[in-house]
Length: 273
Ligand SMILES: [Zn+2]
Image (tube, rainbow, N blue to C red; front, side, top):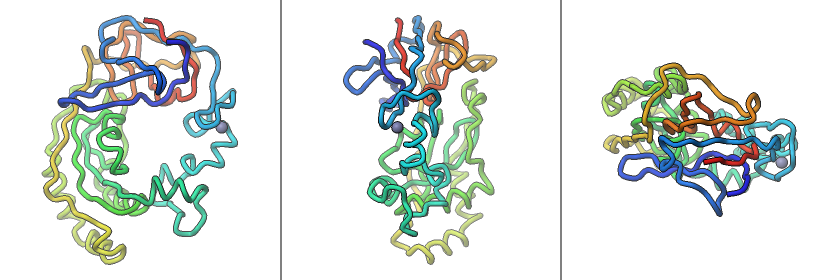
């Protein structure tokens, strides 16, 4: 495989185990099969915008050139803060993108990544989203009709449950088990009135309360978790790698440290194995 631009690693959940690939759409390697082996990423000192391919010195909004980062809907603030969705105001940067990605069913879920967290995802991104966050278990609790609605619920629950993952803790493994169904029932009890109120506001047909969905358990291809998590970056080192000890979330765990592949979106590299 020649050099290629890094992107979020595509994943798949098979028999409870996360499977990872790296490469391009045409050619990629099964990363799980490199566990325990030497793998190196050589930075080719080139970063390309993940949308238009332009050569950039610095990537914006997680892998874009500056013009794309201010033009694309997927780089807008409302993607990070869905409760700020402004599609209804008619000001979406790309209404057709919004229709395809935001004005579609979303789940609000509980997950155990570095502890209990609440999150939202497009219904098409299950279980990918959970694997990307390194969750060991996840449970959808509500299904709503738009991204905006999911954001309102996430914000509501976030007063009680964290909405962030502590990535260092997530990468250390040994995550304590959490009864997600019990936590769901607790939240429903605590926020019953608010949920009713939102049903009234959005319309009952817009909100589905998932009282009996099943917990998805996710195992990761990891031989050994690091005791101390030291972070590697291609901005600092031209070559990153070593013995591949594991893959979790969007991180590769080497005997030399960990690297967040997603935060290197657009970086042109060559793999040595
Ligand atoms: Zn661009």
